[in-house]
Length: 110
Length: 235
Image (cartoon, each protein chain N blue to C red):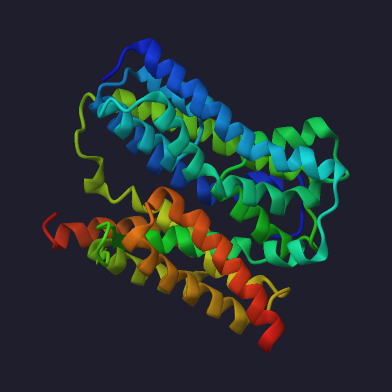
């Protein structure tokens, strides 16, 4: 592990770029209006980002080859989706998800 | 979830996501400690960088002694999706002051964004500072405390994956995606399903040649364009 000062500098540097990504649109859009086309484009952001964040966890990347399937995460996703359909309650979904992955890993001997 | 945009409604709405932060935050603390970071640095990273999955990227790059600029650039790529989320969210805070806008942006996360988008379906398409800031601050405090606890626990536990806690975030995205699909009436349901299917295919093939740090952003941009084209062609 690098020195305390190097890590601290890294933390500050990554903090600044992350902060700028978060606030710049808020600052700019206070002054400018988005066109109708952009608003329509952005209306797809929530489902696209949420499904991308989920699906990325179902695969293991091997650059240059097709990804392999992360079976534990895929199997744990099934009861999680089912609990979403049945309960429509985020708390239930998260608890079912965590238990599902714990049980799946136990059964797969991981 | 209901239409109230008060502090107490926000606390109630945020509760389910708190478990996700605890799970991943504790896991991050343990991983950071195991990699050789002190509990102080683990906590400082959660306070200053505050970037969920990107913090795991930072730790792994620190371990391999990567140059500082490549770490910062990787984190920028991983978090560049924040630009899209802030842009989507900003239009709901136009009437609030600049300081409040910056505050909402400063503590914005994937989860508070997704939660806010869900809230819109109950609140007649409105959001306000009180509600969003409460959700943000609860998330921030939970994340900092959990990573500190994880770093301290790290002395006793070496393998946090055993407990399935790392799936809390994925489960949350599954839940928020499903709730969004069934409640967002502004886009045709079948069109939403088609976009989700498109994302699955794009992620699968994208993983062949695009580093995962960049993939989420690229797939989101392409999927949104695809959605707009499909909407005008068939819906």
